[in-house]
Image 1 (cartoon, rainbow, N blue to C red):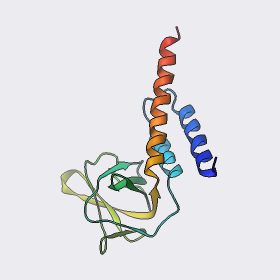
Image 2 (image 1 turned 30 degrees about the horizontal axis):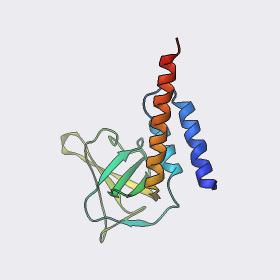
Image 3 (image 1 turned 45 degrees about the vertical axis):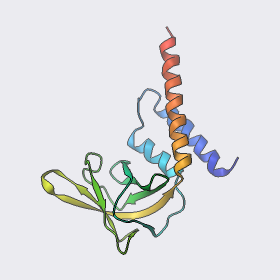
Length: 152
């Protein structure tokens, strides 16, 4: 077993213990899960103007999917207002590349105000491993609820 898979297994066990009574992952737990499946920081990634999806991870990070099998963990320089509540985001880019420390996440807010949030760090996500861990957590949560329901 590699160090990375050992770390992911330990993280999953901790997450299960920490959210046993909760139906979903809290922002900090979800962020920890994504960080466990993120690679080393990169300076930039290719971006051609549209996202395949995105997931807020608290007010200082988010994951963006540029393709179904390619995702990036964006850790922001500071808190990003309304990130968890906005229906849409955008990214700035230069020459079809999003750069850490230069580009921004643009959050749409009420009243047409667009709030820029500076990208501090970019890390590639291991999408297959992340999805497998999320699936394992969901299955473990279902089994735990079933065991609790079966106990008188």
